Image (tube, rainbow, N blue to C red; front, side, top):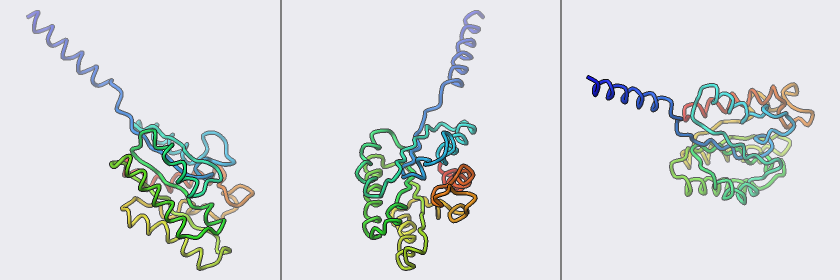
Length: 206
């Protein structure tokens, strides 16, 4: 009887220990420019921070890394991607290109840089899921250029079988009350909407 009780107690202890073991942690990396970096808003107010808060509240086993750099172009992202990929990646959100569009950089160059970043992630982490954030630019850049720029993102998503956020700034871009005085960067209220835009695409992959 004593042996049975000892065995039962051991099993109970092992089951309890298993139940309270920390879940293996995965890594969600946001790779982008000032929109990702949270230019002009306070700590915890950028859309990656809001996504992190949502993930934590749902107790999902993900560490969220904000690898946004203000002023970053697709060429700059291409140069620093290997450094970012030194850390593990399970889900990679690619948000670059807006600064290219505002500078009128040829769309072929932007597309090539984004493709290079996608290739680098796939090479280092073949099982990582990649989300591409679609961007648009004002028609003041010219209708032909604006259309070609907008088409970069769905084209790359289709070619590479990526999840696509159709337009990162949907319901935010061009709305003064949701942007900072520069008319480009979302304010805290705008970032909350951007976080919801991202979440719609991200949630099924978590």
